[in-house]
Structures are given as C-alpha cells and as structure tokens.
Picture (cartoon, rainbow, N blue to C red):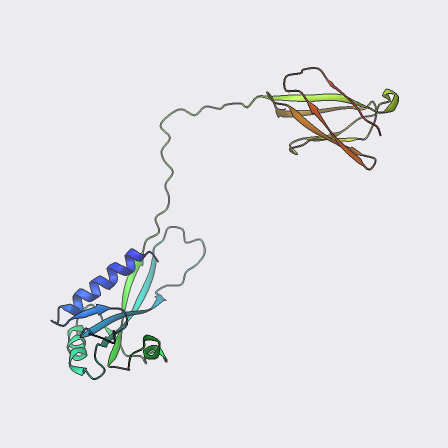
Length: 219
C-alpha cells in the first residue's frame, strides 16, 4: 500500500483523538515522556476477496489500530477516547491484544482497545496516449544472401546447414551445394555459420556485395 494512504489515515485518526483535548502520538508507547494516548497501526485486513483479473478496480482494506493509554494505569484518558467513539466514525473493536505485543514494544501492559479504519486503494488503469499524427510504415532494408559451398577439388557440398550467426535465417545446401537465405538485414556484413559432418566454421559475406558467395571448405 502506498505510504501516503497510511500516513493520511493515521493523521486523520490522530486529529480525531486529539479532539478530546488529550495529547496523542502515533506508534507504540514511549517509555519516557509519554503522550496521553497512542494510535498504533497493527495490521492490514482485507475488506474484500482479491481475485485475479480485477484490473483497475479499487481495493478495499481495513487498517487496524491499537489505541492505548500512554501510562500503564491511566484509565481516564482511554475512557475519554472510548466515549468519543460512541456514534463517531471509529467503532471500537474489543479483541485481545496480540500476545507479546507489549514486550516487543518494551513497555508494560496498559489499557487499550482497537479500531478498524476502512480505506480504499485505487488502481487506475494506464491509458495509452492518443495518436495525433498519421502512422507511417518504415520498411527495414533486407537482402538475400545466396551462394555455393564447395569442398576439396571444388566439389559441391550438399546437405550442409547454413545459418546466419544471429539465428534469423537457416537452410541447407542442395545437391549442387547452393543455398539462399532471404530477409537478412541489408547494409552490413552477414556472418554465416556452416555445420555438418561433425565440423563447424564461419564465413563472412561483405555488406554490399550482390554476387553469390562462393565458400570453400575442407569437409
């Protein structure tokens, strides 16, 4: 949950409790120079079941606060806050204080009750910006790289796998050792990877050479 939602909710609760004329503070009680009452956020509770695919629907949660006296024996301060809650926006919840809470805060047990504050967390759906200019299709220049693979004595090598080093295109040489790889980027050299008969090697085709490549290998 965004910090701003928690801060705003806690601030509203502190102002309400401060309307009783008591000194109030957020968080667990302080051992030295305590306030009259503390508003301590304990838990986030789901107000509704969260299901996948809810998109931008808001999430409703309850923030559970513990309202406790600053002094272990101060019943009067807590009674004033409890009286203000009658008919007010924060209904008291009388549930046992979680075990070990006071020890975790390093303070002695004291009078306390809980309140639940409903909050709404909006999840706005991202809106794509409106297109205000005509769309243009820009074709990337491509070329076909073709050639022949020859073995010792300029004998054609059939069945050899020929692929671009970037993996964009692949084929095999035909019975005459010829191959063709269409749709490769133009304007830059193309590195070919050739493999077969348990061996592999590379051959680079220049950027702007329109002639079919003649590749000689020792296979």
